[in-house]
Amino acid sequence: METQQRQAVGVDIVGNRFTLCILDEDGKHPSYYSGRVDTPLGQAHFFNKVGKRRLLMPSSDLAVLALKLLESSQVVIKDEQEHYAVWAAAGVERGRHMARFAALQLHQGSDSSIPITAKQEQQLLLLQDAELASLLSVVGTSQQIAEDV
Image (cartoon, rainbow, N blue to C red; front, top):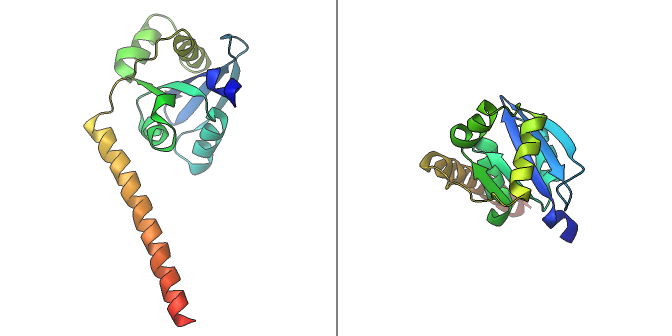
């Protein structure tokens, strides 16, 4: 587990697909994974691969979900237009190359995150409200079953 915490993960999102690159503690030996950001299976694959590692990713719906599900100290969010677009304009190709570049940025200490926007905060609250409604529904159904029995 300690090893995972020292590893860096860079993420690039193009359309509805993510690419992530995991670097070892020395910032070498990249491992790449990809999947869909818009499906529960793809999101589960993403979070399974991230584990307890720190990650740098562009601002997106997946970043909001990462803030919700992971420790805030694990997640570094960079604005798509201010960072990823600039990196692309400087010659870093999107996809694997960008994910590795992001992981290297995190490994080298460029880990100041931008604050989440009001829209992203609202998305986070909506996710929490939906979960609460789901839990209340389960409790209500369980209570009804218990009464019927």
